[in-house]
Image 1 (cartoon, one colour):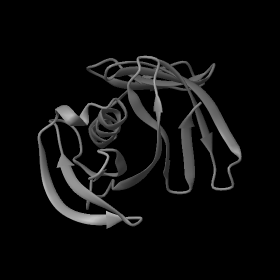
Image 2 (image 1 turned 90 degrees about the horizontal axis):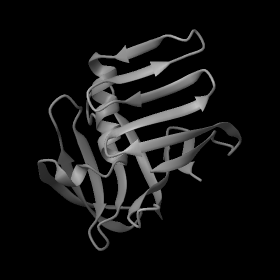
Image 3 (image 1 turned 120 degrees about the horizontal axis):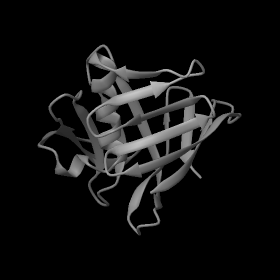
Length: 160
């Protein structure tokens, strides 16, 4: 699957535009001629203007693996436990904790009426905790729905 990613700041100003190619969990993301990152299925890596490819290890790789599982729609295949029922922006959601070896756990806030993910918290309660608000879904070329726009902190990203 080939997608264009647009990264905007809190005022919706364009920060970067990139391209992502994905096959399952494996992907390559290019932000320009000298800035790329990816996952081979065994190793996370990135490059910068110096031309060297650097493997990601430790917490960086654990974080990237959790995020990759979320965006590759692989979380439905992971062991899960329902943590609580609550509401998010007025809609009833189930908080479901998923995890996999080598990755930080993810608390997914799933809309109980549609099954859509509304929010995901990577490494909940940990030092790398990140909340990703899922704004919308798009239909990929394969015909399946994938996360189409999301925000974290003051940044907002979407597939164009």
